[in-house]
Image 1: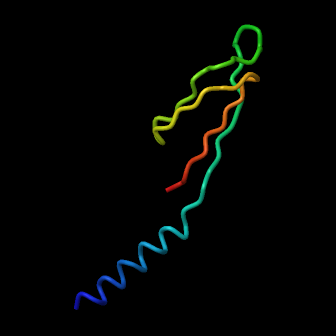
Image 2 (image 1 turned 30 degrees about the vertical axis):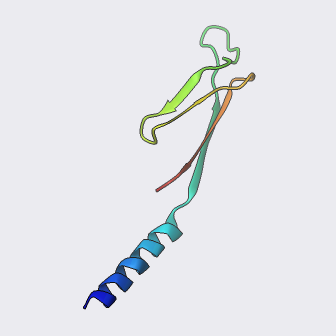
Length: 67
């Protein structure tokens, strides 16, 4: 009884991993007043609990798993 259950559970976990895909969110943070890029601005995703800072050109990249 337990072997089929564990086999099913293992197959289910493997199928979830197969559908997981990586996502990338990127952009540029600019000043509202003059449109210049903001260096070192913090960008945070509360959903993913990930935060990054912008580079010298105001660009940021957040890489995360969709799962």
